[in-house]
Structure formats: structure tokens, C-alpha cells
Length: 112
Length: 120
Image 1: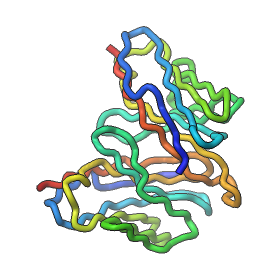
Image 2: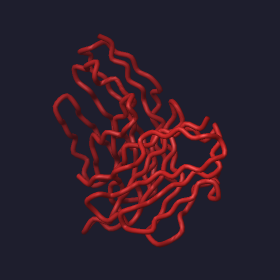
Image 3: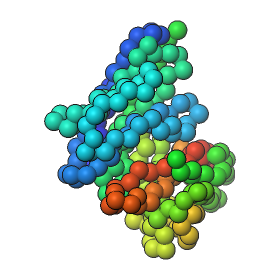
């Protein structure tokens, strides 16, 4: 069965600090996708990144970077030099077959 | 990326009435659509999966007679909350997907903006 675990419920940082959000997944599928979404207070899901199971390359996009390690079933997300606008709930998700299963989410507070 | 539109974004209804939420794929044909529910400060929980032209598959614990799902076309799925009660107040969000060439059955899902339902 699919499962996504985000052990960090809430994280609070001061602006300009780096912060890493952890994600551990479980799946029996050999082919699957992993995602990160941001959910600001308005509620909509903002797509951040998709990674398929065959692509373990890390990725950097501006202040965001992702570390995918199949050996530890982890797909961690780092925000460098955090900003107040980064405050939101961040969800890690996994798709195997057609279903997308979400982790519990990590609420990030960035204080000025 | 593909666009999914959900309507309405907010709805307030009286207890006992029914509410319909629409989910449309605007620029692609969605063979499969999903409905999620999110209670305050909680994660998104999958309610049901619907394939065009067939009955929806509900997750364990979701009442299919209360949450009616219709996926009559490749661009539209509707969720009707029947005889709504205050405990049904929640954020409902849909997603749609389609098979990508060469990707087999694995494909990303595109999410609507969500509908905040308040039952008073």
C-alpha cells in the first residue's frame, strides 16, 4: 500500500534561514511519481515539483531544492533563505497507478 | 500544464439541502477524476475515483449514497453532497489525470482550486 509520511507537523524559522521539510514514502510500485505541493491560506494547491521513480537527480529551482534518495525512500525539500511568503502548508505526495496519496503536511511559519 | 477548474469556490448551504460541485478539465480529456476532502488543519483524504462512463470507486468509510459522483463526460465530473449536515463542512478538491504516451498508467494529477463548503 502507498503511504507518505511527513514527520514534521510544524516548523517555525526566522526569515533568511534555510529549512528542510522531510518526506518518506512507501510503495510497492516500481514506477511511481513523487510530488511537493504548497497550500497557502487561500487553500488552493500550488504544484512545486514532480519526480518519477527513475530519476534520482536532485533539482534546484531558485530558492527551492529537492533531494530524492530511493535507498532511504526519501524526497526532502529545502527552502534556502526563507521568506515570509513561504509560510504555508507543504504536502508531499505519491502517485502509484492512478491514485495520489498525500502526507499529513508540514506547516511552515516564517517570521520576519 | 493542464488546467482543472472547480466551481463554486465557496458555498454555504442549509442543513438538509444538497450541494453540487463541478470539476472541469479545460484543455484535456480527463479519463480519471478524483475527489478529495480536507478538514481544517488536516491532509487531503481521497474520497473516490471516477472513470468516465462508469461508476465511481469509493474509499473505505466514504458513503457513496451521500457523496454522489457523476463523470458523464471526459471533461466534467460532479460531486453532490446530499442532505448536507454541518459535519460535512470541509474543503473539497478535485483532480484530473490522463495517461501520458509512454508513461503507461502512471501520470500526474492536476488539481482544481477547491470548494469550501459550509453547512449551517
